[in-house]
Length: 537
Image (tube, rainbow, N blue to C red; front, side, top):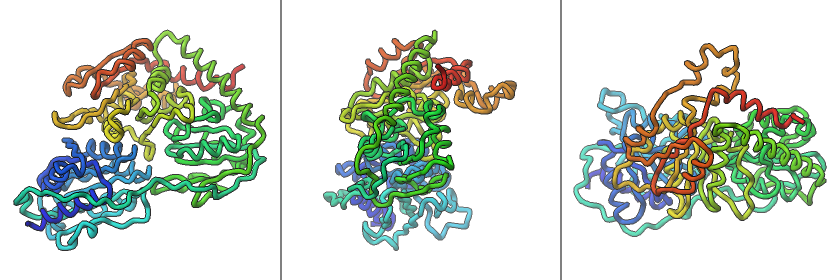
């Protein structure tokens, strides 16, 4: 057996031993030993193989699988292929998603020379991700090629030096898998920090905050300001329109904020957390940069916070009453619009997700529209809502959504919600071979022919109207139906709320795109009207 074949099989054995059940492979020559070993392990039933033609799509597919609880690895060849993994690796590192990355490399003796497809891959992802450089003479067994780490959410990067010959002499028939104890999610355990009652407190639940944020809010009787992907937006204390309420005098009365997860959606939330007169209690967040960008008065280490009882119920009820009022007026405003609005699209998608279902939501406006439109679910009626909020980029969302759907049980109803620019940015995620596993997934694309989020920001103001379209609006005029036809992806186009609801209720199975056409010309004005609802009346 050649050294490269032995090393590749040791690496794949280590993957299986450490709980990897999904491998996404991008083809290449230098990674051929790994490709053959992964294929043989898949044939033996030890893992599931997925092949993608593009490394960036492959990495985001593996990221999506890992984000929803599967353990996935991405495998690529040497050179620029490795650089194409970088966006997904950065997202995983900042979000605390334990993605496994295998990059094939030339032997070390060729580094620093003009050898084909050879660059410096050791540390290529920067100081945020440690690289474990593996050569055939340094990896005698499976455990030797697996790095030890105390952080269960760290990205694992294995750079595998492979020398000729690159094809095996025989077929590998691996033995039964002996899987080591898996990495577990953060153990919340018992209450470790008791917070005193009295200060007027709200709980902010950012991305991946988890159920403990909801539990604390309900135990203490505090308002819960939970983002859609927090895992906390359930129960009786979560507020639908909290983002609008933070612009009202009620927000000025807040004296303490308990913050969990990674809040990223709202400037009013960031302004609240940065206020000098507000005490900030930090429950923690995952990722390589867990420190908060604002002053923290107290950190809860090693467990979760709680209280000895419930606070004054009048505080919560004032927030609830205001939320009910603004929610009614928001629904009325949108219903009076003559054409389909992005908020209505987000609301329809949210309502279509059944209990136990999955929704992967893209960055920019869709996740913010969803934030205003998704009503809190009952505690026992949860849906999984996930998003790439580590760095909140628009790249790789189609692939991430497909990966998320593949990483959940096949019976799970799955949706994705994203904008047209986000969809175009990763449309090659729809390029799947005929033998590839395909989930049942409805990709809902809110198409307003450009980047509407910029219309709501400073650059969308009237002072910059002359250059806005060229620099930020970026109209593209792409025929999404024709684009979908190129990959034989079923496509619906809808222009009204009833058409959208019918499409969402009538899935064809497999991956399909539902294009919801909305306008962009009035986005800034309509957004201002929505934000003004909380201060009217």
